[in-house]
Image (cartoon, rainbow, N blue to C red):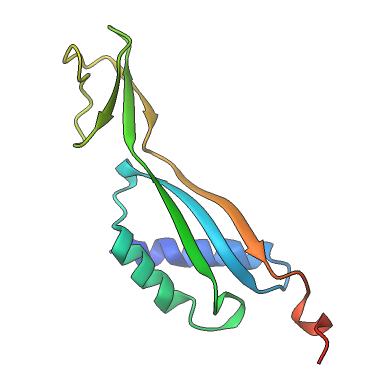
Length: 119
């Protein structure tokens, strides 16, 4: 279950970039070839964010399909399986267009530092 270590890396990056503020939302883009199980990722995230600056942080994930472009016939194919073959000509001279991403797209933080909040 590599989702737990992914959540730890996401949390570490978010907290390091939040400059002492609470993190409200993290947006990710994850490609199909990263083999991340969506339900497991969200479950691990709920465990990881339990307290501190991530206590109420939501994780929004855009899952990107694996897409290839055939160098032989120019067709673009969205893959259901990790087989790098053109859906039009069955060729193997292909380039991966999408599906290998793992990006933190944005981190939304509160507008004030905790120490600056008015009681």
